[in-house]
Image 1 (cartoon, chains in turn blue, brown):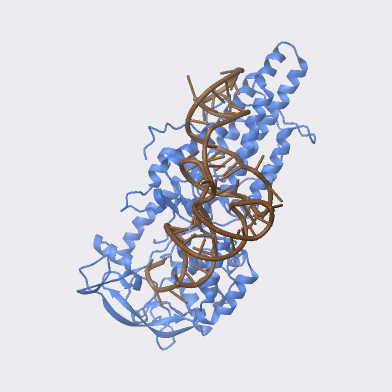
Image 2 (cartoon, rainbow, N blue to C red; image 1 turned 90 degrees about the horizontal axis):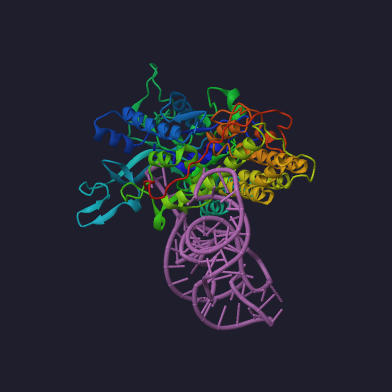
Length: 527
RNA sequence: GGCGGAGUAGCUCAGUGGUAGAGCAGGGGACUCAUAAGCCCUUGGUCGGUGGUUCAAAUCCGCCCUCCGCUACCA
């Protein structure tokens, strides 16, 4: 629950696994639902924790749907198979000698549980936490299980050094490496008092905490966040119930996470996996945040929060996806504003791309009686074919590097090239000459429009992971089949479709031009 | 405090030794297929400050200023 999807995170994730090369993919999103905080808030609402998280999950899933984000599984840490996975991971760590009973102590807020030392304030009346100033904090000592992270220091450092691509971008990797080098402490993985959590599967005596009737001994406590939330990745890959699936999906190719949880995913998590005899993920990508004007973190209390519902209402799902991923640098924090998004939408989607498609379909339909013209494919015959090869190469390279904003930029350079091509060739002049009986002009008109139609086909398909709802509408206007579902699955390997002239020889008729991205009036768009 | 990053046109940023760049925004023009879109041209910056190295510095070095990230159990 605390790691709910944010637009850039979820939208970015939703297209990274798209089957560009035809590989099978599995895409997870989900929620971390166990914590004292959640139990407390549910109690405030007078409902059970489960009812509380069920409601929130509904909102998250609705937000994903609105943005056309379609994971293969939305995993919840309250899912029964996840509970089994978390408990199995604890058992493995225990069997491996990596967990032991210790003592955890700190400031304890009766409402929220243990508080970080940096979150509490000293006052004349004693130490308080800012959320509940009227409630004095207690210094509490609790017997907990600890994970022996300290035992993995050398291996972690070696993993970072031997696999420079495993934690990215580089500056985040350096931060984490610095964290490791300052010395790793063990961390607690159970909580004694909490009841809203996964039952800790091992008792103080080292034996199972499960009773004969299948229930769990409450004295054993619950699993604390690290051995609960992080486990979701392997649960979603089939651990431990489906070894066949797990062998296929693990290690994960990519975790995309926010910078606030980098340490847990790049230091704790690999060590926990190794302790269980499993492999670390191949790559963890740490993205930044969308910041409001002035570089402030968005929050509802500050009133600078951008609501996904308003966002999609104004830009449409594809527009919202595009402006977010184009405007935000995926490797760092970025200041965003409603105005900047509107400018980006109008400039890139309405004016450049949408209008390119519109003028192309309009001219081809009018001048050639609706028959779809074929592109020139002889080497060197079409400048656009040459430009496309370069654009596609840059696009793919930047996608691989998770630089989504740069990837889009390379695609849009080609949009610009296509628009300049229109002005250079002036199809309307060629059409006039052709009508007057100039056969050479007629041939050239057909070639030029064929190239432009092909450029639109390629752009629509290449951008489909970003614009999954636009792509089928665009291809339909060009009279092309579109084989992909909203989640990118179903068709042939996308990369094979992206070569110039890949659909040469297939007949088709152009449909009526229909604007893909209506221009937004800056004044009328609500911010 | 320690480690790291950043400060370049109104905005977002690229640019690691050789006469300052892109996109957007602003201004002008020619055209007209198109979503008053596209295309061409253009205004605009003593490249945070300062001292130094060099024939030459946004680019290298010193110092200073400002901002940001990491510096473990809220996640």
